Image (cartoon, rainbow, N blue to C red; front, top):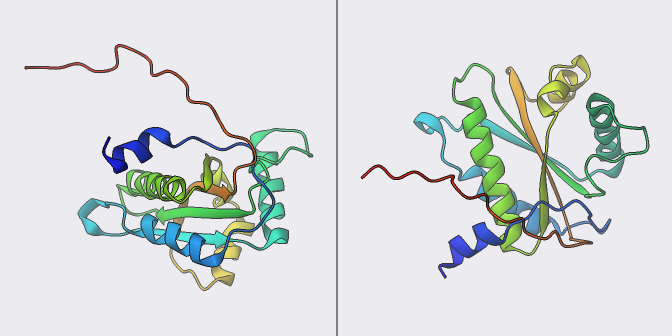
Length: 174
């Protein structure tokens, strides 16, 4: 089988990560793959914030948990030590599509390197909060951004089994 297609088929969402930090060169390689995602009109309207600081990661987890409505002790990032936050320019009509392609590239790149990943939602709600808008300003990020998703990354603690593909999802018009 073609190695790219094999990577696509073998990728799973990891929901149990080891706490061990990934090497920066691996994180950078995954981020670079995200930056090469297709984008409408080649606008490249997305940005990626790499969170490896445990204190900040845990703070984001607590807020994400609160937005999700879970109990306080739940970690919606499943113990992942790295969170890549994908945001896109709010003014660009393709922001969600472009950000989704970045997220897909990040997860596929991670899988190709033997790293687990999981798309975690609620970035949109987070980056509507003043606290997160101020966080962007503190990083020197100007403009108006919408949160697309969090890509949780880390070494896999427990493999996820594949689900069967649902039949009847392809229609040919010949």
